Image (cartoon, rainbow, N blue to C red):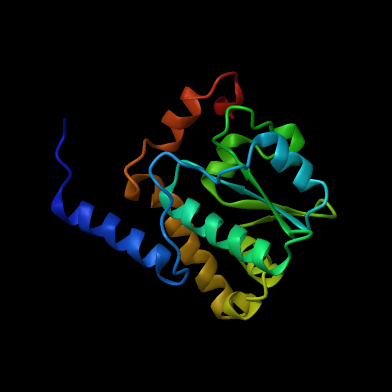
Length: 185
């Protein structure tokens, strides 16, 4: 078993801590993934939600973000939540049910689908999700002329390195392990 270098482990620990700092929620127990959110429930919710967010259920930081968004959405809109969540790591994930967004593309950068079918990606996903849960002001500056491109650039760096920083195989390996030809795009 290869030892993790101290700087690499410190960086992962720091990212884990920072990723949860603005949420003030507990990290879900190891191996849990949005209790009660089966693929079937996600599909049925996606038909009525304002936004369907495709997330990587194998990413601990992604799960923290999704748990925060889900909990706040349920607290504010208990009778009809605004955001549906679809785990792209679920073996039942089907691109054709989500505007053709392949596993590879969804794993490479965050994607969401608005109720009208418009596909959002990168920082625009967070901007819309936070708007729907009443915290749009947090991401509003990312739409400004100077800050927007910087935010997109910073997110691009995160997207490029998140698998390595969270101790996971690279995108090619993950795609190779998926069944079918989907990973060969």
